[in-house]
Image (cartoon, rainbow, N blue to C red; front, top):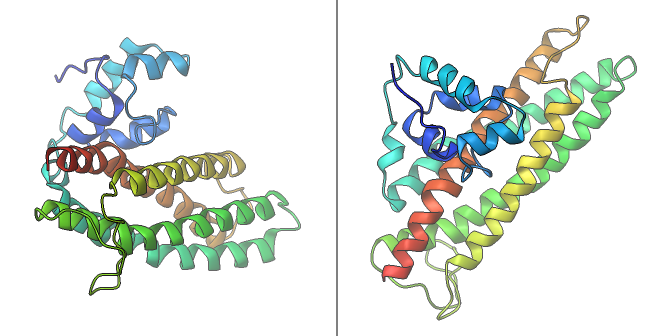
Length: 246
């Protein structure tokens, strides 16, 4: 059986064993924004026994196929993957979840007043995520592709695709710092949604739309955590290293 080293970081555990993402989420261990912590430290912060958790995780990865293709991608390939996978998912799902939020709150809001808070918090999340996706797609990701192609950032006008560039002499570190702050905010909003929904558990009188709504929120959390992990713990460090080496 695979042995899980409790001194490994949460981020490296998920990179090597993506199937562990759900197990860490179930335990309340933040592997995306808090991915630089060791498993031992994260467990102690949650009042969990690191050795017992490590044994449970080892059993969970017994049949794990190992790292996914994205774990070894270079920066340019990884931004393409993130756009194609996670950005496309969010552009499709956010409007769908909004429609479910409006429908379920309208029908069940009187009996379940927490739904108004859930819808409001989801609205905040959507209002943050959509401009964030545009900034990545129009500014940061084109810069990363140019860096990966051996170009240096510079200029002040949009490129041919309409994407802004950094001022001459600027660093990609600046837009990355903005993205990291956005990710922290996203993580907090997802935590709030989990709390308001009781872990996305619909009530016994919840209709099919109610169940679909909470299931969609749970899937949104899972996908966004993995999305942020790929950027915070793989893409951004690689890009900063690439820029420093240039």
